[in-house]
Length: 177
Image (cartoon, rainbow, N blue to C red; front, top):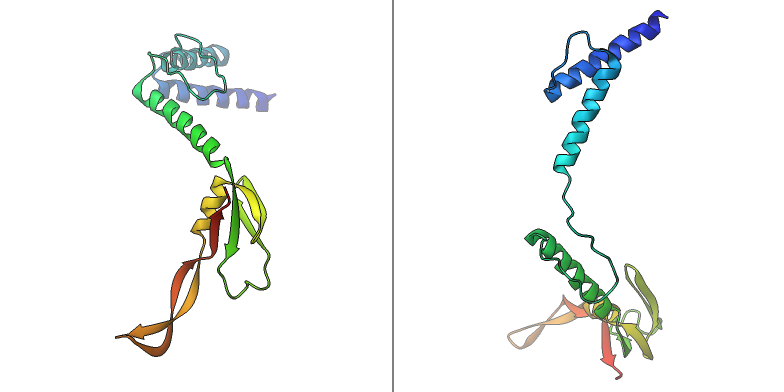
């Protein structure tokens, strides 16, 4: 019984500390239930004040153009514009084109007949030297992959006998269209 009373006193003391931190006024002999109610009321009033006021309902539909309500602020309209533009970029990057992909890597050129390309949610195993339909995002990714190739060093028009590493594109992408 004493433990129950001790826990209630500790909880009441904690509530009094919280109420003082929030700047609430209360009598010294207030009960736990009433003090908890005052604290809850304070938080509810604070939530109502800080909550954004929605003046009209906005229906969300999947379409190319997103209408920006006139009452939105600059930051919100910029976010809507960003979302609209990113959806457009995503659609554009998933458009396909028929291409022929060839490997320029002489170290594995005779052994390899496929290229594995992964762009997050879009990934494929691509046959080399054959026409294949690919999304534009994978075509751009293939064009950007580079490897080092040893090249004979030439100084003053004469070969030095040394070789230096040069970055070259690993794949050549030829348009079939």
